[in-house]
Length: 266
Image (cartoon, rainbow, N blue to C red; front, top):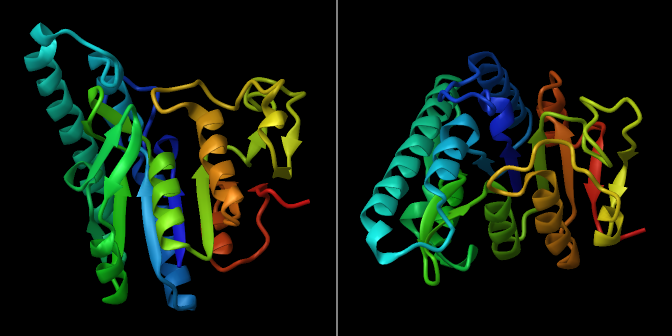
């Protein structure tokens, strides 16, 4: 079993104020996944980010922040707007994958997951197991969910990876981003950015500036923290550059790909 996360920055223009899909990247990624599924049998779960579809409305409506009773009607509409936007992106992704012959099935987090203070507290994964056993590829994505303390909150794709992995115990966890892995600062703006082959401790974050702007889900630091939790459970993960052609195919086929391994080992 492999859990593959595809970042919203790959699928969309994340900094755009408009909801824009990157059709070229989407088609390439779909074809690489199909090629891997044809090359060797595997159970695959796909997680994707919200990109320019989910982040702007989540920031606009301040979902996950405390609010007064009088704001509830507007917050509720904001919740609906965000959920609808991320569903749109998921539809584009599923359409592209189905055209490639990949039997994807959407499983929205807002339909079965609940949280408390922005952390997942419950979610029955029997449906995931059933779909996997029947040869489907479940697709889940960053979404808004009900929160016991805050009423509503955003659950990132990275937190979904952690929840899925600790409950399903996959053989491989891969995150496809728009950089080669983890750097101490943004390599797109700093020529002296230092690359990490392996990340093993939160101590490594002491001088860490991250690789991209921190968004409503925590950016690269948020990803690392979620993955270090998995490392404590003995589940190793790898962050790679999904914008490089054939990287996704190679990593799914366990071939050598430049990236950062998140592990507690030496």
